[in-house]
Image (cartoon, rainbow, N blue to C red; front, side, top):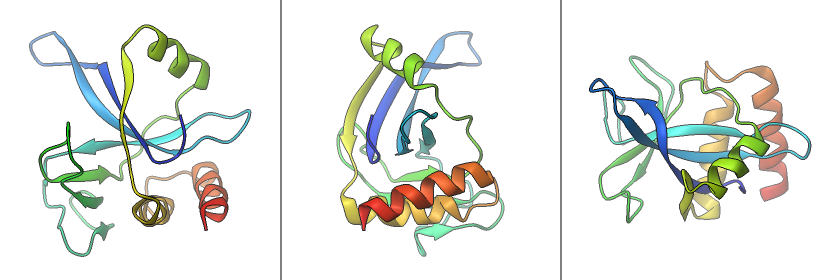
Length: 140
């Protein structure tokens, strides 16, 4: 689980029909001895523009990734809204059970821009921002 990896969690939430449903997650920071900072990916624009790619405005902030490629074959945004940090042990357990799987990796130049965008988002906590900026420093 390295920064830039895109993972599919097949049991991320319970849908309106009561079934477990999948979501895609982007790992942004994984500091040693701490939780993983990630954000959800979405194909729903909901007022998120394509340009500029980093958008902190209303109604929802996002970073436009374009069409990342299989399995993400639609226009895709990083959702800038708050997401609880992920426990690395639980992450590994979900991987071992086949619930969570890596499906891709962002190019380094895109990852740096996304991390910078998420670090400046309103819903990003101070701790997350620090972890994101530390990760960004190691990627430059």
